[in-house]
Image (tube, rainbow, N blue to C red; front, side):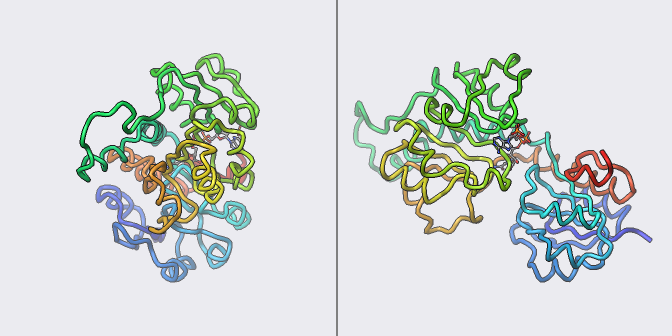
Length: 326
Ligand code: NAP
């Protein structure tokens, strides 16, 4: 008998076919609507494998209902939507899709940094609204990127890819992690900093950590007070790492200059969210990894992880490694 798998969103047809050849598939075959929780709860008791996205909350209550589940394959590198401890306790493997989205997410992060510094969305809207009457010395002036200082909090795969882009702009790079990366310091010419020093000295601050108990609310009121009044904060990591209420107040009181945000505490972000009222905020709908090629690669990696786990093999990208004694 083929293992039963539930897929929580439409995936590329060739990958669906590949899965169908080895699994008994049911699918929430929609492009733009997340699977209703109630359907997920109905499916979970019987399935052997789950293919899900970051829009699904795979919490302890849901996992408690699973009788045969062997693997939860998340089509994302971040897995804060999954209660990994609860999965581990039940012997369920959790997998993710690191690596294939690194360069694409670094591209978007740098694009957002540039768009925010040079006020590109605001300038474009200004023109389309018919407000462009004349060239004017200080009209729509922004912040320089070339020769500036970039502080990266979370120097992992995407952080390092961001450094390689920033080097083309002759940026001086500071970083903060829990562990220093001496090899990367040497290879990329970057400097380790305590968080406070990084916040004080950077012109651009990019958040690139995962969302964890430790990073939740990591950037809040007291941190904005340390930043330059010309500083630009970029968050393409996860909502909830930066306190949105405090970010709003830091922007309206001119403690910092602007922010570029791809991720929010609540997604989709409500239309009346206070950050969206500020022209100083460039806001995107969580599109860090959204290139056609990369999304297909991510789906491919997630399918491979799922099949490997269902065959009893060790998946290429396993989050709770302790489960297979790795
Ligand atoms: P990664 O290689 O694991 O890098 C994460 C880095 O964060 C590590 O270097 C880690 O170093 C650091 N870190 C973890 N906890 C920290 C803490 N408490 N304080 C300071 N640094 C900390 O992950 P990645 O592939 O670069 O991805 C990073 C995150 O980006 C993902 O988790 C995901 O949430 C997000 N992401 C978003 C999008 C999007 O669409 N917007 C796309 C892809 C990824 P230490 O362990 O030494 O602290």
